Each structure stands twice: as C-alpha cells, then as structure tokens.
Length: 134
Image 1 (tube, rainbow, N blue to C red):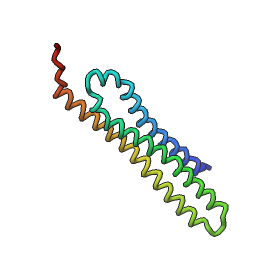
Image 2 (image 1 turned 45 degrees about the vertical axis):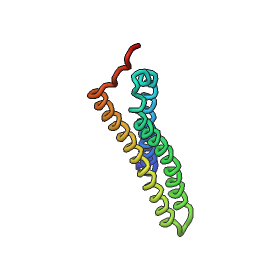
Image 3 (image 1 turned 90 degrees about the vertical axis):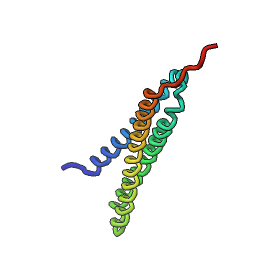
Image 4 (image 1 turned 135 degrees about the vertical axis):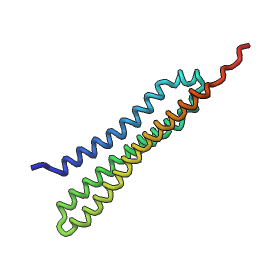
C-alpha cells in the first residue's frame, strides 16, 4: 500500500526545489551577462527582474521550514492521544503557508521573466543612442 505522507513530502520537496531552481537559474543566467549588459548600458533594464528572482529564491527557501513544521505536527498528531485533531489543523495551516510561499515564488519568476521580455521589446524598439566620438 502506498505511503501517502511520504509521497506528498516528495512532491513538496520537488516543488520547493523547482521554485528555487527556476529563480536562482534565471538570476545566474542574467548575472553571467553583466559585463556585456554594462557595455551596452542595459544594466538598469534587468535590475527589477533580478530582484524579483531573488525574492523568489527567498520565498522558496522559507517554504522549507514550513514543510518541516507541517510534517512535524503530523508526527505529533500520531503520538499525542487526544490532540490529533488540533495538531493536524496546525499542520494544515503550515502546509497552506508553504503552498502560498511556493506559488508566490513561481509568480516572482514569471513576473521577472515578463518584465525582462517587456524591457527587451522596448529596447529593441528604442535602441540606446551611441555616445558621440570625440
């Protein structure tokens, strides 16, 4: 028979890891191009995207302790007779907080990516004016 608690913990771990990976990966990808962006005077166009992805990483990292607390209260519900319902309610609240954090992290990625696309569209329509040569 399947252990649903173990399965749900694996799903939670995967979701948190994916949220962390997409935000951190996007930040690293853009930051690896800083020298080129600086030469083209485009650094200001990526600042908000990198900030959104940084917040996404922090939110994903905060989801880990909420997942721990949720599973901890499930364990407590199995050990303490008479408190099962109360501990499961606390566990469900921590699980809801964790889900909100993961979804918010994914929204940070989407927002940062959308801003980056919008900025690149604007830049391609309005290229920077090159400085006059002396």
